[in-house]
Image (cartoon, rainbow, N blue to C red; front, side, top):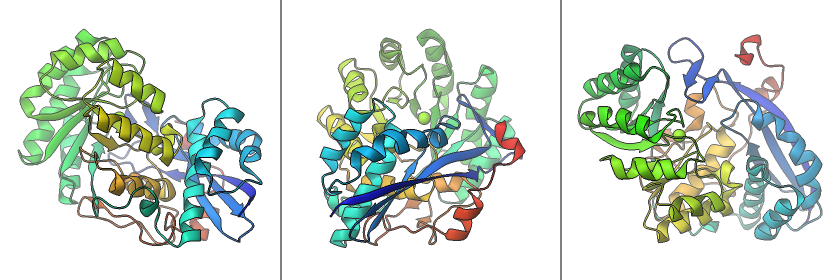
Amino acid sequence: MKITKVRTVPVWGRRRRPFGTVTRTALGAAAISDYTIVFVDTDAGITGLGEVCSVFKRRGALLRSDVDMALAPAVTGEDPFRIAHLVRKMDQALDGVEEAKAGIEMALWDIVGKALKTPVYNLLGGKVRERIPLSYSIPFGTPEQMAAFAVERVKAGHRTIKVKVGSEDGPRDIAAVKAIRAAIGPDVKLRVDGNMGWPTAKHAIRMIRAMEPWDIELVEQPLPAHDLDGMAEVRRSIGVPLMADESIRNPLSAMEVIRRGAADIANVYVTEAGGLLNAMKIFAMCEVAGMPCMIGSMPEFGIGTAAQIHLGVAMTNLGPDSDTCGVLYHEEDLLATPLRIEDGFSYPPEGPGLGVEIDRKVFERWQRSPPADAAE
Ligand SMILES: [Mg+2]
């Protein structure tokens, strides 16, 4: 089989607004997700689907030119079964841009699964679990708004609530944690995500200690991604596990976190890793280092979410509840058949490949110009 063409289409979908305004975290505001959908065509008549997405505004759409100009030429004419070879060819063609490479790479797994008539999870080692338990993230709001939304998500089935903290309003962050714990009761896990918002280790340690009385499951990325010494200092100084998110992108950065003792847990992304193969390498490195992993979200649309779920059901050291439910953060999704996300769990599609198809009507609508408020 040969790859005949790589096609890319920029799309955007509106994010949900639980508090009536654009959602905000320490990473900034997000009115829409503007990503790139990738189609990899073959001479066997099989087309693989992929998604280029990023947590950083506009990046998922702008990376389209990297796919078109550098990555597509590197894989066109090649055998789509040679995924490791093609990942290396893409790395030789263009440094970095893991999210763009992931868009092509997940499409390759989709092609191989469709050709072999089996779900992608069977290509990644097979299922070690049937479903993935889900966390849900609560963006910045008033403590009352955040607590009411957390209760809504618990009622929808989530057994873990992630509170976005790391804002410039420290007392509000602490009050939000307190209000959410009071509202959801003692049996739901509550974690906090600083999204790199605290400037120094001392500042982060003071904030985390102030939150610890409300039974925090873990603390995610309190400091800037590069500050691994600071992360290690925070880790030694707090009573709860520390999870690295932005500090871990690809296998190389995961190795640095492990070597420097900068985290207890890893938050692994399919897109930031550069695809499923690299994400599996991070899982394997962490497993050997005794670190559990979870799967994090941009949040993805349905194609990217499906890739995450196939990974998650096949990884032995999947630990804390994951974010494999990006579609829930959008007003609608572009899949013809929605992913099965029920009672706080996501389930892998059981069809061949990634097991997803695009809804043409939504797809066409999502190609029109974004609304004026998308620039916020
Ligand atoms: Mg995070």
